[in-house]
Length: 168
Image (cartoon, rainbow, N blue to C red; front, side, top):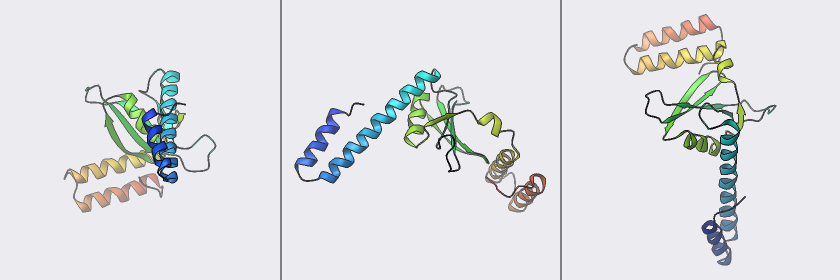
C-alpha cells in the first residue's frame, strides 16, 4: 500500500516541528485512503465494474443491524450513477455521481465494504414494502397531493394492513 509522497512529506514536517499527533493523524488518514482505493480497485476488478454492486456496512455474521447501498444507473439516461441507501425497512435516500466508480468510492469511504446481494430479496418482504409505501406517502404529502389528515389516515392504514410496528 503506497502513501502519497506529498502527504508523507507533510507528516514528516509536522513530526519535525513537534506535532507528532498531527503527523500520526495525517499518516493514518493517508493509509485509510490508500486502503479504500485498493478495495475499490479490487471490487471493480472482481465484479467487472461498479454498476449493480450492492454493499453492506457490516460483515456477514456481524451483530450490528446492517445498512446497504446499491450502485445503479441514474434513471434519467444521463450516464450518471446513483448510490441508493436502504435497510430492511425500505429505501432511505440516494446520491448522484458522475460515474459508478465515484459512487463506489463514496460508498467505501462511508464504510460500505462487504459485497452482498440482498435488494431483490428485501424488496419482497412486508417490512420493506411498508417502508416503500411510507416513502411514497411522504412524497405525496410533500408534493401537496395529500393533506395532513389524509397522510395520517394513510399511515394508519399502513399499520392496519402490514401489522408491523417499524416504519421507514
